[in-house]
Image 1 (cartoon, rainbow, N blue to C red):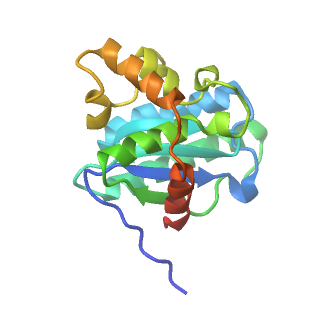
Image 2: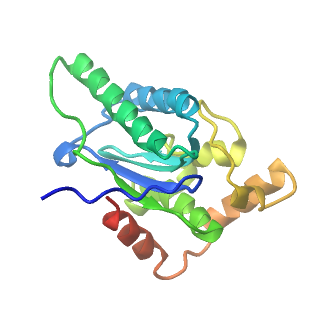
Length: 199
């Protein structure tokens, strides 16, 4: 049976989830995370893709990315990210195996309000699974870069983030309050279902 075509909308953010093969560990040490983020930083410029949020977990990744008019750039970015990380890990471990599941999940984000909710969902992933108590304690997400404008990779600022305030300081404060605020009932389930339906 042929695979269903992936829905990719130009100039719209997409929530991407990619899991390790058989849910195995993808990031075993700090340098594994750092290498992935260096690759993401390099290739987002090559393909003209905006990166709004990320969270690298032990066996999967979440990205919020926006392709340009050429929607094929999103698939090209993901192919390069996964291929480069696979070669890196295989070289380190002296093996030749698949690192990722065959396809990543992708879900278009079509409203500003939903985009901000998805960014919060992504950055709270380590809190949700009780790896940390506060999003700021986890070094492998975009949260700290977003609330401090410091880090090895700085996220692009989407329009709804920019609308949080008239200055960088005000936006950082309001975003921190937003992430730490009450999550509406059903929001996480809605986001999970949307990504699960993604091709």
